[in-house]
Structures are given as structure tokens and as C-alpha cells.
Length: 140
Image (cartoon, rainbow, N blue to C red; front, side, top):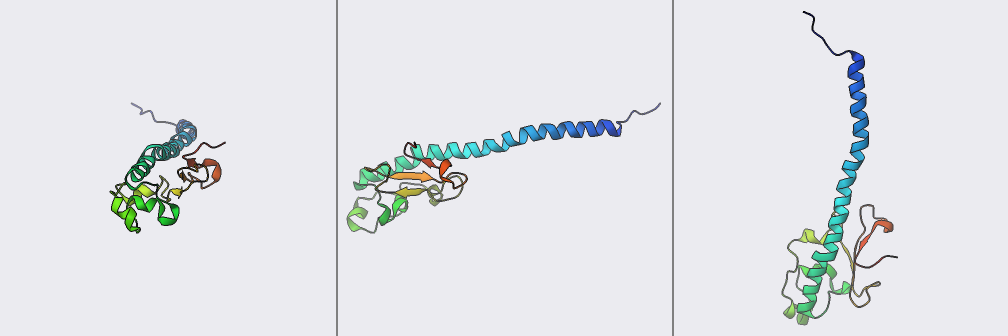
């Protein structure tokens, strides 16, 4: 009895089909990870960091000023004695909470340029270009 085997042409056709499928699937698969990081950054701005900053303000009476230490004051007591007495932190769990999903520190400015009565909080996004920044203000 003769064993039937695949011909070289059949094997090459299967390899080509798998390659074509991978070419269509891979960009969508890898792009999903980047979209997830962007969504995580947006959620962090909208809830986590804003919540910690609002709690700091409720205890201390003001948002952390950029010149006084900015976001680091969510983890460390202010050097100003009056503010240090009111501080009830830490307001974040880990030092890593001060970094965006791409491993860069969140940008913070208080008083804000766009939110003049509070603060501006943003991530430079995946490419550090200004067109993909994730911000706590409406971009026009």
C-alpha cells in the first residue's frame, strides 16, 4: 500500500495562506494593546488621579501646586508646615501610580493653563507627540 504525502506545492500553499492570515490579523492584534493603554490612561485621568487630587484638596484646602512638588505631594507630606498638618495621605498607593501606561511621568500643572481654577493633568500618549496626548481638558 502506498502512503500519500503532501506535495511541495501543497505545503507552500498552506504556508502562503497562513502568512496572508497573519498579515491581516497581526496589526489588529498588536494595535489592540496600544488602544488598551490609551483607554487605561483616559480612565486614570478621569478617575484615579482626579480622585486623589480632589481628596488632597478636601484635606489640605488646595490642589498641590506645581512649584511645591506637584503630584509627588500625593505620596509625600508637603514641606510647608501648615499644609503638612492637614495632609492625610498618601493619596496614591504606589510611586508607579505617578507614571502613565507608557512608563513616563504624568504631566501636571497647577494652576492650570486650560483649567485655570484647578489643574491640568496629561499624558504625552504613546508617541510623545502633542496630537495623541490624553488630557483632563477638552481639546479643540
